[in-house]
Length: 215
Image (tube, rainbow, N blue to C red; front, side, top):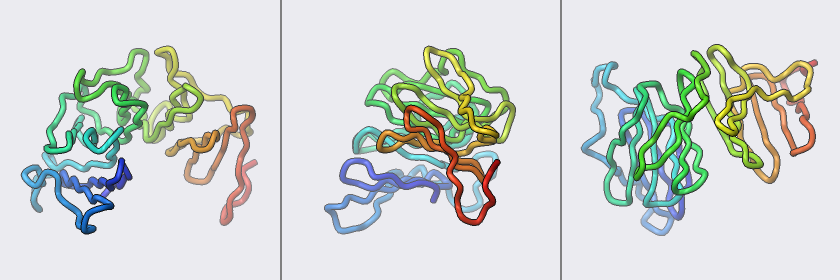
């Protein structure tokens, strides 16, 4: 399994081999497979095998999961179906802004926006070369992207159809971030050995146990 998310009154999980599961908190505690006909059996060739690293959605009857080779799957409360995707890149993360605004990111600098009704399109002004956009979050009306493992890499924003690098003013800047999220009015970003936070006014580097301070 790769990911688990609480959506509405249920837990949804996804994983390797097109596994999709749901557990309702008011039920008997059993995990139910949402798409047994899609599950890939052991021995499926690597060229066809699909790993699904992220599942998310605005409510229990609108749940998305993404994975390799431009895979986008959608659960409507009854069935799972595959949606059209304009790229063949590996898709990594989903950010839910609203029912109509679902963001998806991944390899080759991919950034998509759309929904199951109107479809997904590549966002204008995007394209980060070979970089892998691993995580994203919305903070104060701006989408933040953590891009690593390629060129260029770093923390970026997407606003007004334009990608721009984030300049924190910290010395050194956060390098190769693989995680970004926001909660309670604070934006957090992390790389393997670095944690930074932004409260809307100033950036701060957080020293954490087991590693020398970054200076």
